[in-house]
Image (cartoon, rainbow, N blue to C red; front, side, top):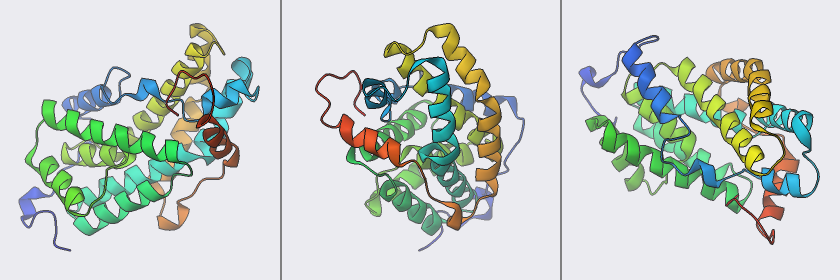
Length: 245
């Protein structure tokens, strides 16, 4: 497959501490960014219903395991692979990673969650922070018949706009945790202050997983949280629910 662009000038200079780049990242991974993240619990709603997650300690233990060994870890690796493919103008690598991201979800709800948010992420970034290369990437994925999963959208947007990989992974994983904490508050598992305590306790986990994901290769893709997949499958037929996953 041909490169996304053929000009050497298209290859980005990636900054590490550019304030404008970091402001973009803060906006894109804010809870107020309109990707619909508030509508998803990633199986947490059933875990609460079934008594698997109870109170602050239970939530912290659940999220620690999920981030260290589950979909967030895998998504961080996918975001890093996407970032590198886009930075290198490697269209083949981008499409390959996007296909992997869509195939690696264990249930229908989890697959829908990531592609709905991924599509909304790219559309919103393109509308508010337009960039010709972002339009090229979106077109390349459309030609390949691939819907962009959320980690693919995050990695692509950051690379196009010169946001460094490390902070992208930090804030991506932090946003995952923050959304789960928000869901737990709405499910009355914890209150708001305990929610912040859980978020603070998981900071070392987020940084460790992000560091590992940045250095990971293709063989490091994978998740080992079958209970999360089971909760997601049970959620599909849960009678009364607040969330779409």
